[in-house]
Amino acid sequence: MHELSLADSMVHEIEEIIKKENARKVFSVTVEMGKFSGVEREPFEFAFPIVTEGTPLEDSNLEIEEVQGVVRCSDCRSDTILDIPFIKCGKCNSRNVSFVKGRDFLIKSLEIE
Amino acid sequence: MCLDCGCQEGNKKKYFEHQHDHPHGSHTHTHDKHTHEHSNKQTRILNIEHSVLAKNDTFAQKNRQWLRSKGIVTVNLISSPGSGKTTLLEKTLEKLNGKLECSVIVGDQSTDNDAKRLLDKCQNVFQIETHSSCHINAEQVGNALDAITNDKTQLLFIENVGNLICPAAFDLGEDFKIAILSTTEGEDKPVKYPVIFSDAQIVILTKTDLIPHLDWSFKKCQQSIQQINPGIFTFELSAKTGEGMDAWINYLEKLV
Image (cartoon, rainbow over all chains, first blue to last red; front, side, top):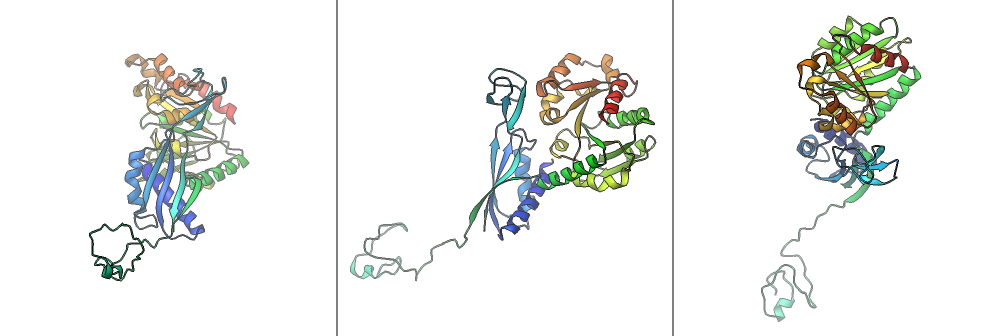
């Protein structure tokens, strides 16, 4: 259940951001949640209203954009969507791949006032 | 007069039933009889690409720079509870005694039982009690560094909280993440918890002395690990019998 501490971290990060922007209220938060970021959608959604209570994010809308894992193959140079639990190239089946998408957990945009 | 909004057109034209949104023709509405719910908020969209863990990452980077400036190699040991991390560390510290100067940060939700066990083998042990949290964070590690390292320190072990999910997300400033998997956990753990097994630079299979008593296949376990992290090196050992420990110790000596 590290989603609670992640949600808490996110609130602190956003509070810092809106301070710099001279904003007083956040109406919506859009996050990018990589399928391979180790963060689960449901516990994060559960934690969000708890950690935002009494903050400028209270009652804000949480939008989660889930991002598929994408790997780049060093052999055939293709980018393919990852078919968990197999970490390999979806085109040539090579295991010589590295992540290009799906590892990140980012605050993508804020609607602020 | 229009009964709906009070417009003067109503004097000239017969009142008709209409919805709020309706064609106005030449007349206009004043709002003296009712209010429109206009929102006063003036919002703007701020597009950012900001890591949720930016604060932790900053602390981790600070730790990494500090540790590298001191020439200290740091390994972050991550596993399920009960995989044998502390026993492995006890035996490792025993074998490294007189060879390498080691320090240990050990994380548990509660108690300093592990630190007490390890203090017999190493003077520089720091217990982090994480309480409600399921992982160690980089700030906690940074706060411990001064207290448990000195000019001679060469190798720092971080024994993370027993958990295969959360510690994977938190960079602590380590050089290597090592995933530990015991034979009693079944062969398919790496597939079930792919994030940590794909992040790790090394996997250690522990409790190999129990293999004869288990319905456990080395081949299946290796397949599961390689499926998630192709080409990753694994150590197979038993901290209890000492089997396979030498290769692990040699590896650590070469790291420094």
